Image (cartoon, rainbow, N blue to C red; front, side):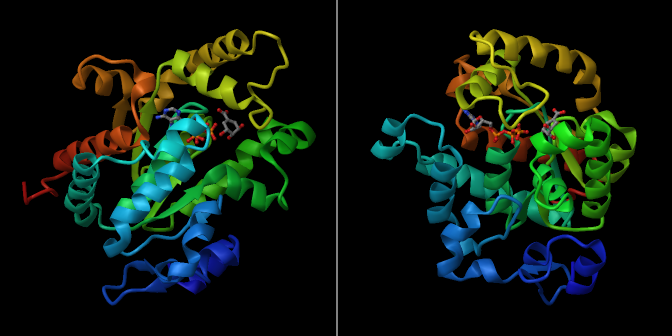
Length: 303
Ligand SMILES: Nc1ncnc2c1ncn2[C@@H]1O[C@H](COP(=O)(O)OP(=O)(O)OP(=O)(O)O)[C@@H](O)[C@H]1O
Ligand SMILES: O=C(O)C1=C[C@@H](O)[C@@H](O)[C@H](O)C1
């Protein structure tokens, strides 16, 4: 994506023109994030975050994970135990190196219910693939002058939000080398799939109980479709998630690849899904993307 296209798309110049450069092959390459001083700013940015050079991947994967999981108990972070163990880190990097050339710059769209980990896992994937990270909710907020999703719902209604979301996805469909965390309801409009199928879509399929636990832990203020002030927030959140999933389950299944936390837990010996780290999930996402690519017109000729 060059500056001209970025301008045409009218996304924030901070995201699309300042940070993007071109590598000799003609595909998109990021430049600013390669310099050390940008490191923390990169992780702190909510909308579109640049990639890092492969030489610093190992160190920064660990930083990224710690930052992305600020809801984990402080003791875990302080003890430093929430770092990708060597073999996991290696596995993650090997898989990403295998898949990245076959992606041909296509974007990865993460779809899934609210709280399914699209942001957390998406940042890890973008890091190891050398892609940038984007959050479609944040881009909608920017399109509406920095108004939060909750306020957009409150003042303009869900239909208005959905129209903006479709417009953002249309613009993103013209871009390359992005991992995109989509809004939880982006799957309901067929037109959105037309845009998302320009890239590879991956459904993070997380059991509703685990979603309700995660969301109850952080509160529902920023998630208008779940917002409640009930005393038993877990039960309310679980019930609302169940109703939404009833409506949307089939739509998520349009994704090219599915990452089932229950399947990962079973593969790893049948533990609890809440014990799975974002790295475990990112590794499975790369595996499932690889499986999808292998099935595509013999594209994955090397294997
Ligand atoms: N594997 C995991 N185990 C435990 N908690 C997790 C895991 N992945 C993410 N979380 C936590 O769950 C919450 C939601 O994660 P995240 O924001 O990544 O999801 P999301 O799909 O982007 O959500 P939304 O669409 O609602 O913005 C966060 O508090 C995050 O720290
Ligand atoms: O599941 C949904 O419908 C939503 C999820 C969020 O990501 C936001 O897009 C918004 O709160 C709606």
